[in-house]
Length: 458
Image 1 (cartoon, rainbow, N blue to C red):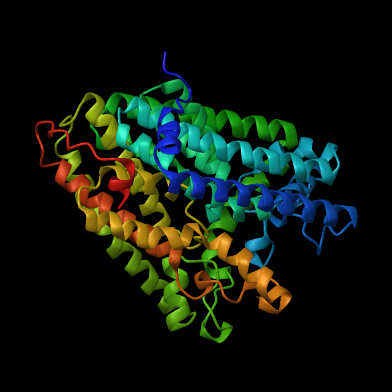
Image 2: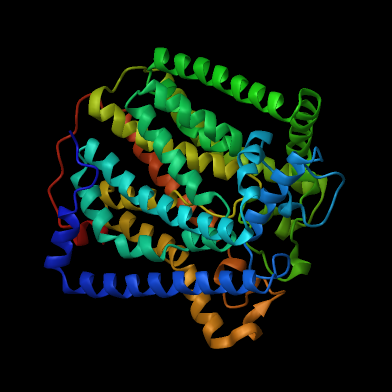
């Protein structure tokens, strides 16, 4: 039976590299101080009762408000067009229902409990990728997972998620659990994780297409069938709990809300002075060319052009089903899941983070052969990973004078450049190239020479 976590690679890095020891110690100190600051700010805000204008996590408040609206039989979704559309509840009714128990405890306890849950979810995300790499016999990836632990500790999307208590990190964990279940063809677990994902962020269902692309049609059809049953059962249970008429109306409002989200979203333009934190293709195009029906159509064209290579590679696999089997197929399944995840984020109109990017970062460092390609992975990803550290240092140096509209750090490069999309497009291109090349191989490739984790990463 496979151990849940084997720390041997971490011990090797610790004993074999003085630089690694120093960097890890510094990152752990940062983690402790940063988490302590988070808890102190949260405690101070709650103590002063500033749950509206203070530090109380904004996204958690949205979820709790939705649960209260559901309990009172009120509208869950935006009625009419408002400027702060991103502050409105965007998920299916069962997700709001799941938050109703938190209304029975104090806001203080709820906020601290969710903070702890996010930390645990992030730790599990790291451990679960070690578990996946172990199953796939990717020893280099496991070594690099240990070697990049300091990057995981300071990873900006984790800290950003902790600030607002959104569900980006829990979704990354759910997506990882689903991916593992799919590549190992564990139907029960696959259906469970997929049914949960579809209630929250359906675009995180990317791994559902992996069996189809690998020619595992029977598992794919069973997965779709049983997930449909689970989804209908969940919707039916929700209607019974909240009332059929009210529940049905909310499902209708949910669909209408998503349908008009793009037209009502408060897009940023050059008049706003900077791009902001939404780094989607649509926001980039609109920021440069202005908001209009024509520019929104142009953004769609740009997204379609970027996704054409993905379609071409997918067709190539669909025309040659069963080309890969066993462990080789499972490894390809991980790459397909990664590239489908990135493709989904290219298509989305709101891209605030790429939480699963940290796992893709480690994987690419482990499997890419060219040193130049690995160097570009570092160049593009590391600045994004260190954004929280930069924001904190900037705020400590400049204080409130370094803030714009109390929401943006003036020295933050990510409000001027679409750094998240840079990461997505680079990883997307590298993975597509690997998948294209893998489709040409009919026999297992020879094992590359063994390098140390530091050599592989450079």
